[in-house]
Length: 289
Image (cartoon, rainbow, N blue to C red; front, top):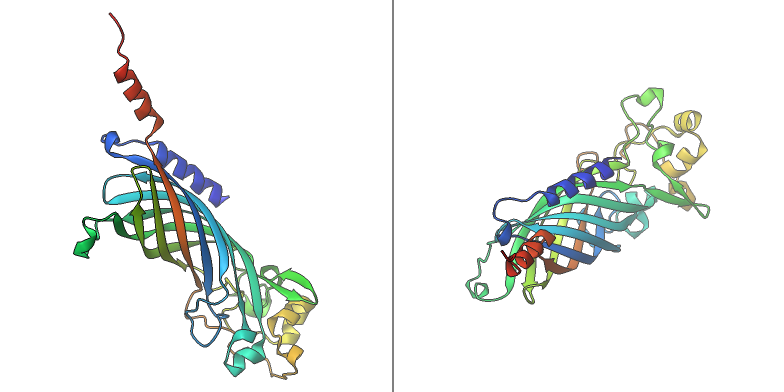
C-alpha cells in the first residue's frame, strides 16, 4: 500500500542525521482535534462550513532541523459527513443526499517558524508558524439506506462503469492532499510545549462525498449498475419529489475539488537522539590509560 511506503520513507528521513546534530532535537506529539468536510454536501449555502465536526486523533514524530524548520511525520484518524437535509437551498433539499466516511491520513509536514511579526512576542514563549507538506489519505463514503450503511464507490452512482459514460471511471479511495495552515506553539520548558493550528487539506479528488458531475438517467443506471445505484443516486423520491433525471442535470459542482479542515491541539514532548546521550555519557566517562 502507498501509506506503508510513505511511512517507511518517513522512518528513513528521521534516521538520517546532518552534520549539526547537537542543534537538533526530536519530538513526539499527541494530537486531539476536529475535522470539517468541505464539498457539495456542506450545511447551509456556503461551500466553506464548520458544521458537522468529527473528532480527530493523531500522533507525530518531529525533527527540529534548526530554529526555523521542523519536519513532522504524522498519522491522523478521523471521519467526516455531509447532509442535504441541513441545507437551505430548495434543490439540495430535493436532492436529499448524504454521506459519512472514515478518514485515515499519513503525511510529511513542514512547520516554518521565525514569523514573530508582533514585536511583543519576541520575548515570550509564543511561536507562530505556517505549515505545509504532503499527505496521503484513505476514505470510503457510505450512505444509509433502509437502516444499512452502503459503500457508494462500488455502485457507480454517477454512471461510472457504464458504456454510455465510459469517460467516468470509479474514483480511487486512496488519494493525496496538500496541507496549508497556520498555528501557534507555546513553549512550557525545554522538554514540553503545546501547539494549536488550523490546517486545510487541499485534495486531488471531487468524490469525498461521492458527488461531482451530472446525473445519469435512472433507467440506464438501473440496467448497468443495479438497483442500489439508482436508490442512492437521487433520493428526492423518498420525500415525494418527482424530478425528471436527465444527463444534463447537475448532481454536483465538478469545477471544485472537495477538501477538509482539521483544527487541533497537540501536546509535544522533546528529546535528544539516543546517540547524543551515548556520546555525552562516553565523554563523562573517559577510558583510563
